[in-house]
Image 1 (cartoon, rainbow, N blue to C red):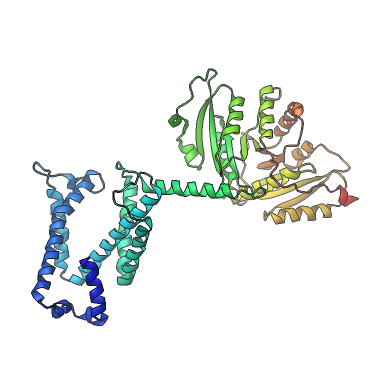
Image 2: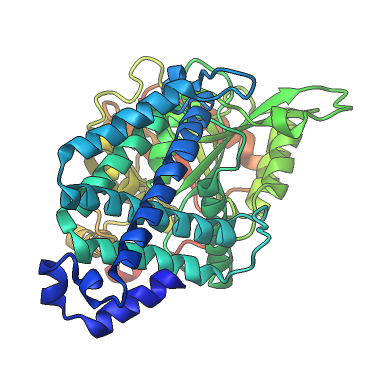
Length: 496
C-alpha cells in the first residue's frame, strides 16, 4: 500500500522533468527530511539482509537440484550454512558496488525484478488455467496473472527497451541451457498441462464442427509388421499422411491363449525408428493377426481425430485365406480408406523421381484419393522433385482432347501439378494390368485403384495383382472410402 500510494503521490505532485533531474526532490518536499533518509536506509538494509539470508540459500537449493554448479550446494555446520553460495553472492554484490553508478545498477536490477514478477504472474495464469493439481490457498482470478504479466513487460518496454531485451536474452539463454541439461525435479511440467488443455479444447472444437465433405486429412492406422522393408512402409505412411495427419503403428503380438493383455505402460512403444518420423506406436496381444486388425479397426480412435485410413503391406500368399477375406470385408464395411504397399526389395523407391497414377472409368472415387496422395507426396522433401503422371486408359475411342481437358480440369481444381497421358486402347483392348506393365515398368512408385468386386472374387484379384507386381516396382494399391467425391470419368456420353 505504501508503494502504491507513493507512486500516485509522486505522479500527482511532481512533474516528470523535475523527477528526472532532481534525485533529492522527496527530501526537499518532506516536512522532516531525515525521515526520508531513514526510510531509504531501512529499505536498503532490509533488501541487503534479505539478499544475504535468502540469496545464498536459493543458490544452494538450485545447486542441489543440479541447476547451478555443484560447488554451491556444499555447506558448513549443523544447519548446512551455504558458505560457498554466500561468497558468490558477495562477489556479485561487490561487483555492483564497484560499478559506482546507481543508475546503471538500477537499470539492470529493475529489469530482472520486473522479469521475475512477470514470469511469476504468467506461471500463476498457466498453472491456474491448465493444471488441475494447482490448488493454492489464496484465491485470485486467473486473468489477474495474465494482466500482471503484460503490465510488467509494458513497464519494462516503457522504462528501457534495450535493457528489457538484454534481460530477456539472458533469461532465454538460461532456459535453453537448462533444457539442454534436461534438469528434472519432482514437480509437474506446466507446459504439459498447457498442451493437454489446448488439445482437449481443440478436439472439442473439431468434433463440434464435423464436415462430411471436408478435405481429406489422413489419420492412418498402420500395420507394418517386422519385415526387412518395414522402415520404407513407415516412411511412406508418414509421407502420405502429410504435415497434419496422424500415423499410429500397431505391432501385433500373437498369443493364442491371450489370457492377460499387456499393461497400458507396456503397450506404448518408444523407439527412435518411430519417434524420428513422428509416428505413434503401440503393441498389443492378439489371438489371431486378422482378428487383431478387425478389433483395432473397430475400436481404436477418439472423437475429433477418428482414424480414416488403414495401411499395411500387400498380402502375398493369402489368396486362399478365408480369415483374410473376412477381415477385408469388415474393413470395407467400416468404410475405411485402404492402402496396400507392395514394396520392391530391389528397386525400393528408386530415385524418388517418378510417380504414376492409373485411372479407368471405374476409378471415380479412387481417382480423387490418388490426387490427394499425390499432393502429400510432392510436399515431402524426398519427393519434392518428382514427376507425377496421370495415365488414363481410353477403351471407348473417345476423343482424347475431351478426356484431356476434363482430367486437366479435375487436376487443376486440386492444385496438383501433373502430366496427363491418354492411352488409346479401343483397338488393341489390352488388359489393364498389361498396360501398367508396359508404361510403368521403370516408375519409382505406382498408384493403382482397387476395383469393386465381390468378396468371393478376392482370391482371383490377388493372384492377378501378384503377377503384376512381379514386373513393376513398388506399388501402392488404393481403395477410397465413401466420403470421397465421385470424379466423373465416364466419357461414353461425350462420345455419343
